[in-house]
Amino acid sequence: MDYKVTLEVPIIVRDIKTGEDAIKVAMSNVNKKLKENKLEYVKVEIGMSQCPKCGDYFESSFFVGDVSLVGIYLTVDVFNAENPKHAENIAKSVAGKALKDVPFKTFEVKDRVEKVRKKRR
Image 1 (spheres, rainbow, N blue to C red):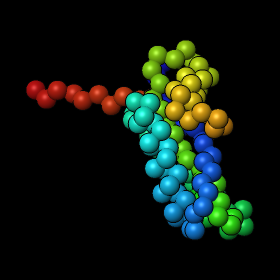
Image 2 (cartoon, one colour; image 1 turned 135 degrees about the vertical axis):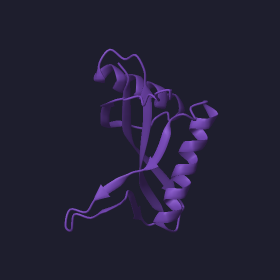
Image 3 (cartoon, rainbow, N blue to C red; image 1 turned 90 degrees about the horizontal axis):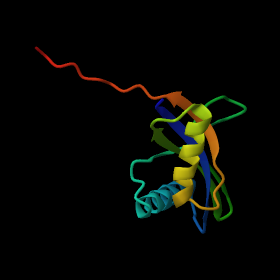
Image 4 (cartoon, rainbow, N blue to C red; image 1 turned 90 degrees about the vertical axis):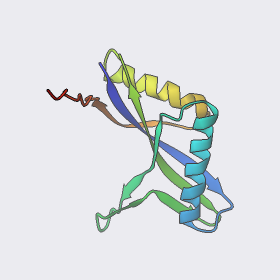
């Protein structure tokens, strides 16, 4: 079966003055590492967190001093996996090639639905 697996990845960025700069640096670093390992097909997005007080969502960048922790989502299409757990393990293995020593947490595993075009007659 085919799955779409989304992983949460925390990225630490140092010597940055703003949360926005931290997000840019984190995204750039992750994309660079994926490209170096020929993993351009892995989709990279900024993570979203929910405020415990008001319930609003914001970009996951937690900034203290000159250090920021940025939450990143990595989405991988996994083909021919035996089950969702197998797809999760494959996605972690693929992303782990580029992002060594970074903990991964599974955010979501969904069945991948292929859109099939019908030929016009």
